[in-house]
Amino acid sequence: MGKLPGLLLILITSGCTTWPTSGDNPYSPPDVDQWLELEHHDFELQLLATRGAKLCLPGQYQQLENLYLKARQEARAGFSDDADITLLEYQTQFAKIQRQMDWLEHHTQCLDTRYSEIELRDQFLLLMQVDNQFAFNRSKLLPDYQQALRRAASILKRQNHWHLQLTGHTDTIGTEQSNFELGMRRADTVRRFLVEQGVDTRQISIFSAGEKESVENPRSRTQRLSNRKVDAQVLVDHHTRSVHRVYSLRDWQAVKEQLTREPL
Image (spheres, rainbow, N blue to C red):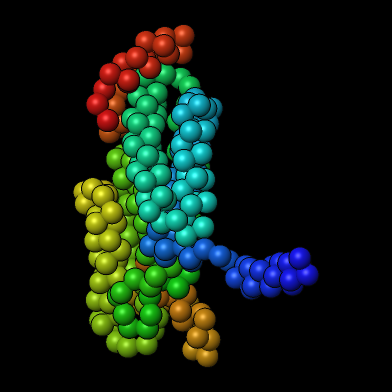
């Protein structure tokens, strides 16, 4: 019996050496690509809320948000396989709620489309105006600009009555002709990237201002960098929008049954 306390002490101290110390994360770090995907889905949820999903489809929106939060928690804990499964559920629910929102937007008065469109346009232009778009004498998109353009494409491809004018700019280093050509390449790079994200190529036109609108202090690197950009202007063609047939929300039960019968 005299040896028992000593044996217990050894077991306790040896067991404690394997337990993570305070501040350590016992899980593997989140997958980078998966984390970027989650950030994009977070932006999708914001867009749905802007369109009015929380008001018109509160239950479906809450279910979608719960799936997103679950996937985020699993990814943060390092359970990437579990997060992938949850993200598949999220994408299925997201596709369904998108179809429901499209139907509501064109057949009911639940959504204030004028308000949501103004807010979407403001968000879109902010994304198109991020800093650090291009390096010196280059037309390759910098990483933060690519991420902003992905989010901008999520808005633009759902607004088929918007027309986007892209104008490439440069600093004053180099000849006027070479800067004009560089500005055009930059605008074309942005156009091609947006098209790769699903935007209709017919929605975009490109121009170049070259160095003509450059305002800079030759001693300021920051100011020169701000001139290496592509400006965006949104033109809205209201004549291309289909006439909405309006139903009362009292008919929502019949509407829901119709949407349920449609394939995903």
